[in-house]
Image 1 (cartoon, rainbow, N blue to C red):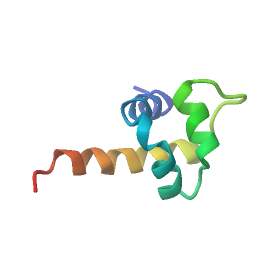
Image 2 (image 1 turned 90 degrees about the vertical axis):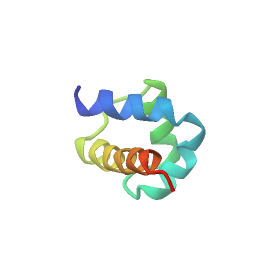
Image 3 (image 1 turned 180 degrees about the vertical axis):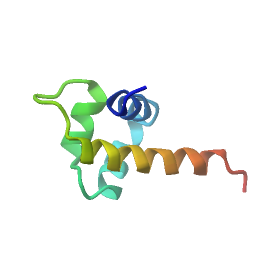
Length: 68
């Protein structure tokens, strides 16, 4: 899976958390997250933004897997 697809899939699973994700990742805005999450963006998202969001989504997934 390429990075864009990974981010889109991760965002679709966390649709109610887009504002929190945007707040946690300084490289992106809520508008950017929403555009990528919906698959409707004017230009190809940059790699560094995708990578930053992917890292954050991966960390959230790890937290989801932990039982406290």
